[in-house]
Length: 526
Image (cartoon, rainbow, N blue to C red; front, side):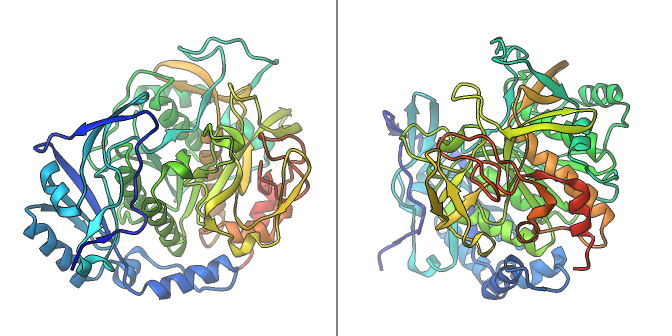
């Protein structure tokens, strides 16, 4: 029988790109994702969570691996496939349902019916492919994704250095600007007391790094003891500071400093991975199923428009977030810094992934003015196309979750549309660089904004809430949509094609946190 296309694996080359055959002797590593055991049982469990129905205690990581990891027979089938085609199995993980295959370009071309090429375009070059991946019929139901054949950068960090404060960005601010330390933002949002003790916050990073000396200097200036920060290598990713505050170091340091300043006794674990679809997924699944550090919250400040992802990669990540929900782990994801277009220049609206996964708490952006620990004004963050705006809109890929049923998005012309698919974001927080966060990056103090700051802000809040509760918050979305009064509704501003309004909107979701009210909601019996 002829090989069968892997559903959702189709790739296209960027506009204007040129391609030539990749070096057949080049070696690479590829991630193969397998189906899970008892998938219907897990889907029912997570579906019950999404509907707000009682589900009993969350699963332990060991229980999850036994019930819903890869079937040994499926692992054996992929091993046999690899051996027959000269590919080496370099690692496997039953809980994550992954096998890592190593070989040459020529071997992978033959094994998966692809033609790997060197693709050159305006943004750089990468090893890529077009069309679908092919599988033999006996693996068609077993293999759900094959990632890593394509090495193009999959995501971008969602931070914005305030104009005039970055080494490569000296534009004057368009309006008088203010800045806050992370604890000052937490105070404005009435975060409940706590230090995050006993919690672990995972940060997903696809480049850059941190220097301990910078962290020590930053927290000393705040009068806070430096938190415990551990780097974990995924797929040969590593803590590798570039020395460029405008690059990925800005993301890494922002994430650590926001979480560490608000939840200083939480353990912070940074998972470093290559910026590819395989690296991104493997970092996420490594964090979710980490039996050593056991994160209770995951913060993700990297992403890209849904249109830049393959369906197989989005489905794989969404399933991983569903697994996190069953384990009582909350996933916070930045919704993007390019408004309703998400930076795509086709004239249409786009939302950012992984924030658009229904199992992610999508974090949008506001412009916050606070005095004496109290909010004076808060509107949708929108500094224009050049300086950024909070991402939000309606997914083109994910179905409408039950907790968003009958909600409406209002466009900039005042027209109302009932959601037919997943709406983004769910919540929001201060993101405007002109009301940004005081941080230290690569030896220098600066001010940063972007929804990249909002994901770790919510992650730190959740670490405090988890500390104060007898049970982890876990999958927060259904609970928040059932208790919108625990958030501060933002009713002014727009992010381009969508406008803020009373209740949920496609700019700031349900609104910004009212920490005291959220603690009251979370502390209720499960």
